[in-house]
Amino acid sequence: ITELCADEDGWRLCYLNRREHLPRPVMQGKPKPPHTPEEMDAAQEAERIRHVYNRAAVVYSHDPDKQEAVPRLSGDDLWRFAQLEPGARVLEVGAGCGRMAVELAQAGAGEVIGVDVSPAMLEQAELRRLSLKEPALAQRISFRLGFGRDLPFVDHRFDVVILCQIFHHIAQPLPTLEECRRVLQPGGQLVVVDLAGPEDAVKRATYNAIEAKRNPSHAAVRTVQQMQSLLEQARFTVEKHEVRTATCSAHLWLSQLGVDDGVRTQVLEMLEASMETDAAGLHVRRQDNDLVFDEPIALIAARRTTSSSDTVPAQ
Image 1 (cartoon, rainbow, N blue to C red):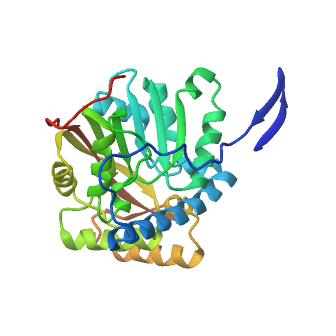
Image 2: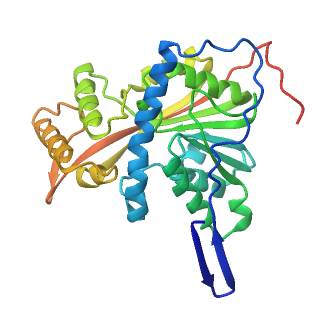
């Protein structure tokens, strides 16, 4: 039980489904051998992400405004960019606190399922869903515990898959992209929203060092071209892309993840050291008593290519 209280018109009971996920679908084909080095690396990667965002969820639970502290793309913006169809069945991989999932349902999605590796983040997401004043809207949204490279859904389940701020956490994105392709309908859409790295490799390396110091689950920031190349390797056709720039407060950016004072000091020193030559490509500058910087965000819309092996089950 999360909450029991009296409203004007009766009692309100909020509860969370703590089951990790529903039974997995039976998968066809030869299973991968267990405990390969690749699988072990992926498990460690998932654990790092889980640790960072379980901690962030504690910050959010004490100060919900921190969820919106750093400017992010809205569900309406994403809907318009990708020109999504009303009634679409949408999967969001990396749902976090559920903000994007709710906004996508409000924008017109028929069903939105959010997946995340952090149980604590999913609790925040479920609380957000339960707090909606429209029961019909809340019923179109659900959340599941899961990892992008091993999605607990049958083939061709969704019309749209969204990877929002996921790429930069994953060292080897191809298995995740292949899973996204598997659960998409032939001709379905994949939308990627992520940090866009500088074209200059040295600046990109500096950006990576700063981000990894703040967020230990960070793997690599990539250029738009690098992300598009990965999508093409996974048999997606890129249809459009653009880069938008958000201005971020270093103070809010650091407080969002609840970093300790030692890490905060080191990251601020790294940002400050990058100012003179723009060493990280972030255009760091002073504003009042804070440092601010530009965070480029890439939006990429791609289409799942069809093949002769695609067999879509009857709906």
